[in-house]
Image (cartoon, rainbow, N blue to C red; front, side):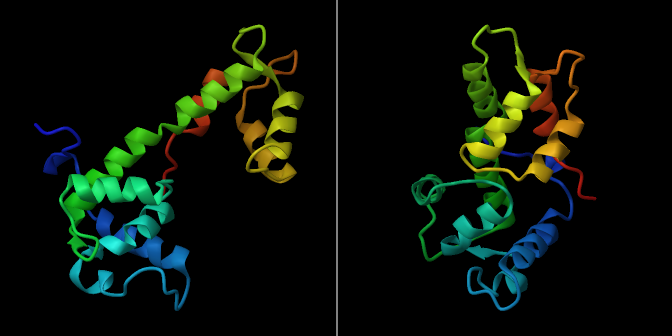
Length: 169
């Protein structure tokens, strides 16, 4: 079996219509970003792949999208069917591994290497560094965290919990 191949029995049924709805909702009414032909043929233009992947939560760079297209021998002006799209998304999501990235970042903060971080320190990092979260967003995250009696969070358990896919059905 080829690497990244998803057998038909493992593919979610009815996913392509959900993909189209999410892309359309993210693009907004009258948006120019995604080809309207996607609704008609069940295919997307290769030139729309970056926008579609980002609408679905992936974070590919233009170079990564180009490599995916080259791997599948797809011209920039060609169209992708759902099977090819699934394989590309699978490879991209496998490559990104957000859980590992977050764990590495938190491990760098954990100077004693105890596997815990103080809740106030986590709040400060989330509201002041990188893609800053609002206080309300951090409150929501910390409500999901199991804060110990000494005000610390086991970050490995916390990251695993927040990286679980959300149920949208």
